[in-house]
Length: 217
Length: 217
DNA sequence: CAATCAAGCGGACCGTGGTCCGTTTAAAGT
DNA sequence: ACTTTAAACGGACCACGGTCCGCTTGATTG
Image (cartoon, rainbow over all chains, first blue to last red; front, side, top):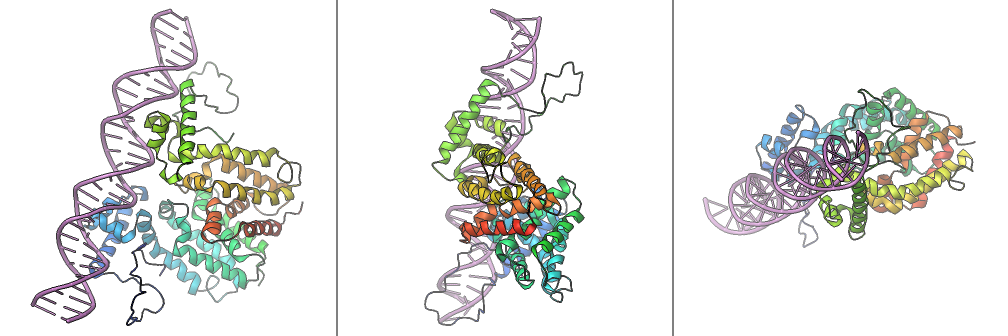
């Protein structure tokens, strides 16, 4: 749901003499060929199998390819690069979180007030990230790539929406970025693991921040 | 001022029969040998020369070594890794900013109220980062390394101090991280360059944030 | 000035991420 | 079934970051 993998598969550019548009309704579900789809899951399975036996740092592209019984080129064709593979691995776990705040029960889901959802959002993300930080951290090689990840966008838009709904004053987009930044995986890992700060303290800081910004709806 | 380079030069472990402690007062100014110091500046010069002729992405360790007329091993010995070299390059430019908010004129320097300094801090960093983002971004390979950089610590402590002095309520440390995150280079680059947001809008967001958090002193 | 020694040096060497390109194959037409 | 075509495949290949280790050299001590 967060998005397909193929990074830039040189789209066939539908500009020419388009006789029939084959009911592709909104945008791209890129629809892999049968063998490609099979290899994709083969690779994902192999990767998570290997990953459960060693740290993410030791996971090499070649080993994944070998474990899946395909060539190295196939891995790169499918996932673009190492980060792409890791992100794809993450994607599945991410969907659970997304479901929780998009359609789950209150206080996270839509049956609570915007302010309540705002307050609940921080701890939910915090815990999610605590559980998956090795992979998340390993997927962060490029400082900017992060902002292009669909999952990130989803969180951002969700937050911006809640901010508006809750009547929080100020420019929603930078504000949403700031809030999201305050619970970023790297920061949280640094503060909790390296500096020994308890997670509860960060949750309190989140609540303080949200309150202070004026979530009153 | 921000710190020396040598990453972990296997310290000689002073635990043994320590006859005289040779007046090393607080901590390490590691004091390079003459040839090492010469090579260090040779390398830094070579690097920034190369850098002014191409993007940071094209700067390879081998080319720097060659341009400086030393072996590749020397570069790694001195700077630890690529990020270390880039950080060292950045260090000089960083000092100017540090001087400005540590001892410069108001509203950034110490002759202004804490709240005024808080407000001035954001735009100052924002502009500094706008000028140097290619290098900064290139130095960010590891998601966590960032938090260990002396320059980062300095900013963080400075902010936390100002927050306390200005009587801002809430846990200062997470708050300082949040504020710093809201003007992080990667984020700013994303918002301004990739999404076309004007820098002024980010400055306003900063002022709004600081105000909203309650800088009233 | 000679001896000692740790700091510095250099470049061969290695592993890994990423690319390239000739070959194979699933799928859509006829 | 046969042709056609573009997607997919695979593994040789390359470049770069980082390590290793034997040699050199600046500093220090007597």
